[in-house]
Structures are given as C-alpha cells and as structure tokens.
Length: 361
Image (cartoon, rainbow, N blue to C red):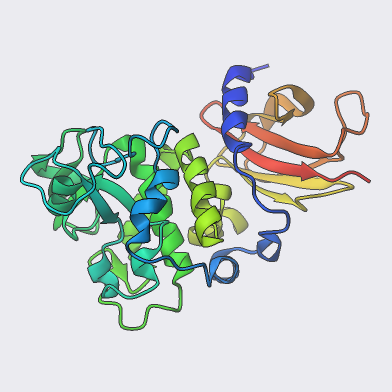
C-alpha cells in the first residue's frame, strides 16, 4: 500500500463542499459534454439571471462578502484592513485603509459599462478604494518588475506571464483561484452576448486570450474552491438566481479549456474528471486520467467523512483514461442509503474530490 488516506483532510473538505446546495437537476443539460458544447450548455443554464441595481450591490455585500458571518466586517481580497459593512463604504481615498468600494474584477471598461454585466455580483467584490484605484483596469497576471505593493501583498507592475508583458495586477495566492473562477464564469455567462465590448489585453469580448486561459487554469488548480467561495456562491444565487458552475464543478474548467487532454490522452494530468450518471440510482462510472502508471486510491466517503467504499486501494494503475463502476454499495456489498457522497481520488501528488448523489432504487 503506497498511499495514506487523509481522513481529517477529507472531513474538512466534505464540510466545505457539503455547504454547497446545488439544486437537483441544475446541471443535467451539461452532463457528458466537453469543450464549447459544454460552455454553451452552461451559458444557457446560468443566463437570464435576476439583475440588481448598482446601488443594491452595497446591500448585497452584507450576505455575499460578510467576513465573519456577523454582518459587521466586509471581506476584502485586495487588502487586510477591516472595514465595517456600510459605515466604511465610499468612493474616494487618498491612501490604503480609507474605506471600501465596489470592484469590477472584470473591469467595466472592458464591456463598456453595459448591463447586466455592470451589476453581476459574481465578478463584483468589495475592495479597498485606494487599491482598487491602483489596480485600475489592468489585467490580472503574475508580476515580475513590481512598482507598488498593497498591505496584503497584492502587486502592481509589469507582467512576467508568458504571452503578456504589459502592466498588470497580481492578487495574493490565497485568492487567485477565486478570481480565476470569476473570469471563467464571466466568459461563460456572457458568451455570445459581448457585441460592442471593448475587450482588453486579456480578453477578446467575453473570450479569454490563450495566455490568460493558461494562467487562470494554473491559478484555479493551485488555489482550490474554498469555504468562502462556496458560501458566496449560495449568497449570490439567493439574489441573482444563478450560480457559478466553476465553483460547483471545478472540473468543468478542464472539460472546456483542455478537452483534448481528457478525451485523447494528450497533455494529461492526474485528475478525477467525470462521474456519469450523477445523480444515479443503479450504477455510476467514475473516470480519471493519469500521466504515468502509478498507485491510485479511489474511495467513497459520506458527508461525515466516514469511509463507505474502497474502489481502488493504492495499487498501480496504467496511464491514460481509467474507469471504475460504483454500484452504490459499501465495502460489505450492502446498498447504501440515498444521499450525498464524495468520491475521493488520490495519487502521490494529487488529492481531489467530486460530489456524487445516490438516489436509491
């Protein structure tokens, strides 16, 4: 046996993922798709959201970006200053720490400040006024030559990211995945609805430039979905009646932007990438890809972190696409109770989890 099961990690992960209450059937029309077909299916699912006014965004922050859950402090990803919700909101600042405002992480000049993008809460976040002004409408990128650093370490300077060398803003590592998933949402929600958008060095209308896709996929992989994002997804859903698919299903990023890597075995990464059907009543097939032959553990856990079924027990598996069938049974062969479970895929370098729903007979 080459692998250990990180039960405590699994329990923590399940606590986070189970907080996401994806409506039953919400993503059914996207099942089995990849590439542009998947992106269009997701677009149709999250299109036509409930549009809020620009002034309402201040109110929305009380639930979408409440740092400690007490409706007191706002959650700012650009700075570590603590701002009181409502009291410290504003528009002018002479230095960092003067207050917070509404940051369009996808700058509104890129879409000519058009509706409904200009009030879409999935990309509008509270931020320090001064840092927001310094960020301006520069693309996100990895910064090499730095000209300015915020209080929490966000940086402004010249990009060192391959494909773009201009001025850029780099958020701290803790939130890079958050912003990446915001961008994948925007590119999907407004796909085909970007007539007249000015674009940017990072975007062509609602489409992401190749260099941006490569960088954002890396950010997405290195900074997985957090409790913060899960909670925010639910809060925005309660207001807009749509969701961020890339928070609910992080694997969709690879399905859309690197489908050949999955379907044809090129540029493979170790990844649990598909569970079909899901939800299921009889059997479901779990698919994953490996770069090289290596030991793999694939287990089913319940929402309390208890091991339910060991599907693969840490023995070497060949490279390429592999599939395992789960019949909704535990290790003794007994049918499990209907409910939410988690398939945990693990190699020596990867730990990932996917939600799976068993509906019973």
